[in-house]
Length: 337
Image (cartoon, rainbow, N blue to C red; front, side, top):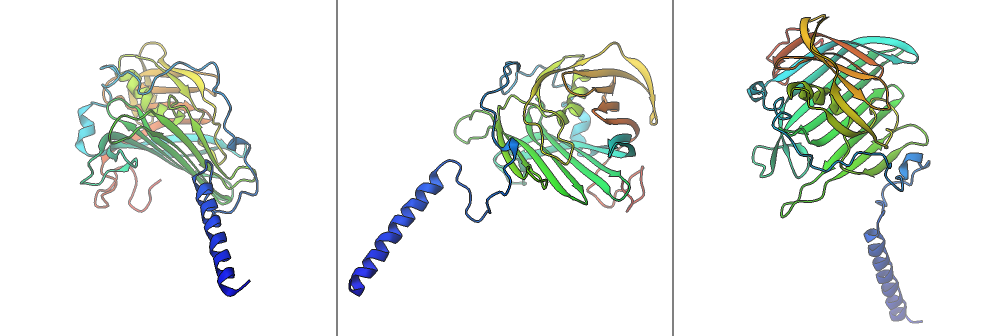
């Protein structure tokens, strides 16, 4: 074969290879060639073939009553400050009770509906939202565990937007995120939910599991409990995921749950003072969960048990924590808990 024939054969084979690569990239499940194949396939990486049969029939978005909106529509959320709550807390790590300060931060935010991040000043698709963070640093014998929980809910409906949780300790980092998608510029899009987890543990690794959108995150209960009391006791029925607060992959299977008030308001005393409180309990098959919520506005969270985490309120302040010129009334600068 002469040189011209060889050149034509190489060109023909290159075109076939290019077409094959294009078809592979268009196929479902195509993985970026730059990413190495996983060494261990996670058991959770395979989505369930069918949804659990006993879930509530819940539409997305949920119907929202005027009573349910009361908490979101409190005037204090328009002040542009963050509600900073500090709790005496305890949890179990390495089979021992660990004591620490748990910090809840909550304020309004505007989200970019296209990317579910904080909206820039000139965005066209802006959605009012609540942002709630829970920051915690838990000491153990040789190093600390650090957890950061982020919850974003639409205002005033408290429809879910995004929930994430990261854990850091000296062995490594695990990150989990739930993101509800429903944005389309031209016409409404069906709701969907992505559950993603990135773990350093053997046999876990990176996992993506699509879920039905009619699912709530356990981490949203801290806000929902306050809304239940503000509404006058309106319960909330849910398909609920178990808590993501750990350094392992999450359980992707929701269970049916109901958040409701339990009895009449009563006086309770916490380190921050004495208050009339209404207890909100979670009826479900998971670990014990309840919240003592201030019976009057602004319906502050006074005490709770969320699984193995127990907490009692010791201080509340409202300030722009992102402004370094504003000092905390609870801790000295450079010594945040």
